[in-house]
Amino acid sequence: MAPGRMTPPDTGAGAEGACVAAQWTSVETVGDRAWMLRAVDLAEHVRGATSPNPWVGAVLVTASGAVHGGATAPPGGAHAEVAALERARAAGDDPGGSTLYTTLEPCAHAGRTGPCADAVAAAGVRRVVVGVLDPDPQVAGRGAATLRAAGVEVVVGVAAEAVDEQLAPYLKHRRTGRPWVVLKLAATADGRTAAPDGSSRWITGAAARLDVHRLRAQSDAVLVGAGTVRADDPELRARLDPPPARQPLRVVLGAAPPAARVQPAVSLSGAPGEVLDELGRRGVLQVLVEGGAGVAHAFHAARLVDRYVLYVAPAFFGGDDGRPLFAGPGAPTIDDVWRGRLVSVARLGDDVRLDLAPAVAA
Image 1 (cartoon, rainbow, N blue to C red):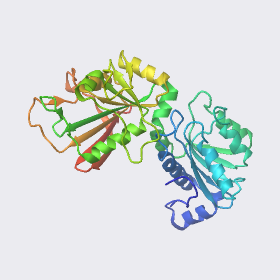
Image 2: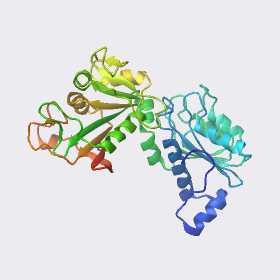
Image 3: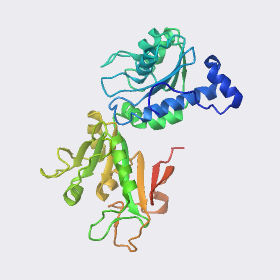
């Protein structure tokens, strides 16, 4: 749903939910969660366009019952909270006495834009519901403190699990200085990525390949090894219609030939952790590692992958001589096998996308 004037969500509470929607001052936890999930949906529409700023969504529910949504604009533009306030004013709705739902704590410092917490307080907003606090050292609770000092009621942690998932790259970068690492893999049902002669196009179908372009558009950088560049000469651009707001930075481990289609690209060397440190310094929030098998093994073996995206095609090479997903030594015993958790499963044409994450530490 695009930002702008909105309709009340279904709170799932029947007649009580209708009462909650009509009398916002009595909104309970179920109503707060419904509005926050609407803000999450707004944020998803700008993902890939706001970096290095976080993709944030906001919903403003005025005292009169009018509802306005906002999402963070590209760098230099309004943040989600201010965008929602501006839409309310443009529609002739007074934000005074309203409730504001925002996925991330409003900022409390001046950058390219003024502090959102100050703008929210000055607008007379009565209550602010926040998904998660911002770990950025310039914020880190200061936004919530500014609002409370101005007499605004602040609630934190509504639908936090959904916001944590959506903003995981930003949150990790602010906490560790490193980008969120997505390792993209594609294989046949018997776990092979290429024939013995190296040929591999196309293992997956058109729907899965289009999904990869969406994944690139969500990422700040796409990373491959120099061997993949020499063998496949990939362009590594996000080809979508309409075109994405910006193309990811193209990163090559090693030296790419000057005439390679990946150029202009950034060439880096060093251990995977050192590469991530450098990308983090460059403001990369999410890096998509696309291969090949040696690079995939390096990041996997170092336990640096935050999310595995595996596309599986209904095909078999039917032997043990096809090329595997990883090139390098694996687990020596069953006790050492990497075990994660299944985040999601999606069918894409005849292919399947599996999203896997490291197991949560006990």
